Length: 479
Ligand code: 4AD
Ligand code: MG
Image 1 (cartoon, protein in one colour):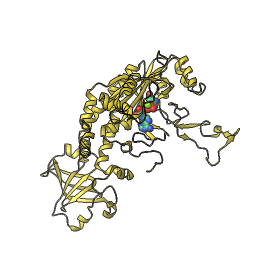
Image 2 (cartoon, rainbow, N blue to C red):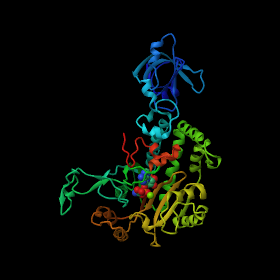
Image 3 (cartoon, rainbow, N blue to C red):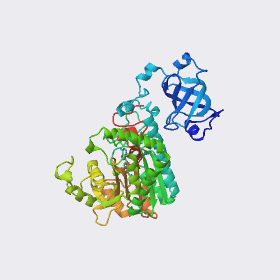
Image 4 (cartoon, rainbow, N blue to C red):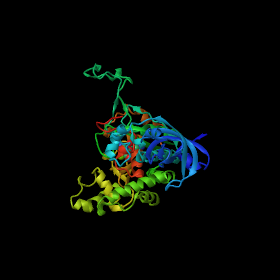
């Protein structure tokens, strides 16, 4: 007898043939119908217990959340919404779940709040919602690899432990094997010579600098790995541990960088719509229900699927930071004093409310902002001829704000060294990075995509904690 997943049975099962299925019980009704799910697909599979083979005692064991293995003949289903069902002759309980205990958990099949589901993140993979979210997350990861592989980019594993703060924001988690209760001292300071790496080390905030070095030999590379930021921002869009994709290409300029990022995003959205059609339809339906609870005026114009299609079909609006500042300063919320952080002109660091205004109200489409003031961007970005701005680009998405941040890199040694000085970055510490500018430097560019922000956009979930299996945020490292 064949053992197939529910997804396989539904797609390739043959009526009249015997099958064995394994999974968890979602519901059991009329002492006859079991809805089984195994995670392979959104759909549950109906088991119909053959009344001749079962009695009251066996029913008692078939409570919600129990895991079972069932075998029987595949039949065409008379019920609505399903193609097949299994007429079961034999069912074996693999792991029992006590009904009273189940009542207290999110496994109890009813609508739970996302907060409650998050508290039981260890169980939420069993729910339809999180099954859908994590299947979409998987397919988006495949989409990323598919996109870069097809364009000749090599997958690079950047180190997770590093001694450099690529973004210069100082938001790093230190890594040490020193005994924190008894720190070795030298000249009144901690003696890092005695630490594991004989220097101060941290978890990486970005693999970019290493990706740049690799691109200086391999031409085109991308990283896809975890990154860590100890920024104390407890928002719905920040994690302390998140996954980032960082492509880097030699001989690419800012325009090429924008084209690449836009094409990548569009590829990921199309890929998800194709590979996760039923999960996305389910997420869309869920959002529609949520929207219908809102007052008319707050409802979004597009539903989830329309929004994804819109961001595939429409070109993204490209404009400079300066142009964006002008728009924001003339904008209605600004005049009415509605921005929490007022826009004071060139040099203002844009907040997510400003980014979202540009995307959602002004342009009504994804926006790519370029040429930011040098002071508010990282040291490695290429200085423009105006000496005031750098060749940076951020992609802003509806409901998300910044989803991609990238730039053309400063490839001119003297300019880079001068910039490092102004950012107070040690030339000596970074001499390995500067070597890439010493030995055959070339124009190059890249960007970083926040993977969870992409998953948020595709699933329509609005809290980043709900699109990563186990979220790490300030004061929270549960599970
Ligand atoms: O804009 P960021 O800081 O850029 C970099 O790290 C560059 N080294 C990228 C590059 O050019 N290679 O981060 C890139 C993206 C952001 O646009 C955002 O989507 C995401 O990473 N991101 C976060 N996602 C979740 N939680 C956080 N705390 C994040 N910080 C950044
Ligand atoms: Mg950024």
